[in-house]
Every structure is written in C-alpha cells, then in structure tokens.
Length: 190
Image (tube, rainbow, N blue to C red; front, top):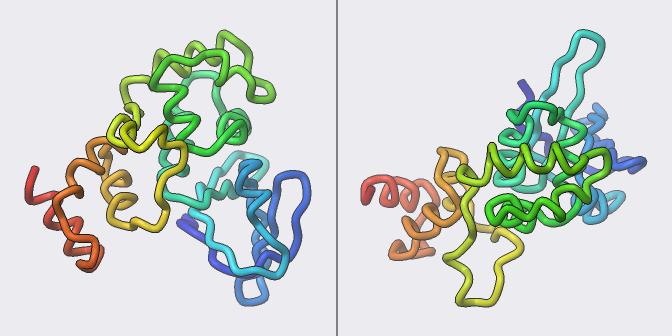
C-alpha cells in the first residue's frame, strides 16, 4: 500500500493533483481545501489512502494524518464510498467537518456534493461518538483547524485517540522534546 507521496505538484485538475515523485507521476484525488493549497511547482506531502476496486486503483490524499483518519472513518459508514467521503471533507477543513459530525450538524454534512439528508444522518449517527468535539480548544475561540505541525498529536490520533484526548495527553509534555519521546510519555501517562 502507498502510505504517502512526497514530491512536486506537476499538474492540477478536477480536484486531482499529479505529484511527481522521482519522475513518476501519482494522480491523487484531494479535498477542495487541499487542492486550493497545492501550488504548481511546490513540494507537497499527502498521506494517502489506496483504494483498490476490480476495475481501478485510486489514491486519495490528505495534507494531515487526522484528515486521512477521518476519511477512513467516513468510508465505514454504509452508503459512503471514497468519493462521498472526499466530498464531505471538501465542505470545510477537517476539524470543521469533525466538529460538525460530533455536534450532530446534519445540515452542514448534507452540503457535500452527492450526500443527501439521509446519508448525512447516517454519518452523524455512526460517527458522532467516534470523532469527539475539539472542546479542549474552546477557550481559544473555536478550533477549526488541526495544528498539523504537531506530529506527536497526529501520531496519537493515528493510534485511535480523539483530538481532545490526544491534546490532553500532550498538554503537560514539553514541545521541545523529540516527537517519539513526547508520544512515549503521553502513552505512559495513560
């Protein structure tokens, strides 16, 4: 499986980005926010989900590990395939989508192209308890975007922690320690 691609943005079209990795171009389907951030000629890293079907293989890319994990949760919902999950992630930043699901905002989720009210309700019912609200950041207004520079936070979320639990586990651990040490200390405290 292809876990991530790191290379230069060679082309952009229809919410797909061609990433040139050592003279091999990978076509990666991305959400609208990631598509808008990708700049031709710039280096980019996408965490990828490699979707294999009988007739095709597709790469879905995400600028953060948290967005990839949310995508993987979305495709577990009955009636939500990779294209619908990507459409849901295209209606806002991944933390906006996560908070909308956690708070039961069916209207926000149903704004996604091809996602009706019934599917949005199913997403809310199936995932609201799994994604958790970003309540830890409520004091600093409303957190709508994950700090993608904090690799320890993303690592804990990749291990199954909610954003809130991962943030709490790391709050007393110094940021200047190496990522592996911060994750080890956070896991040890649990």
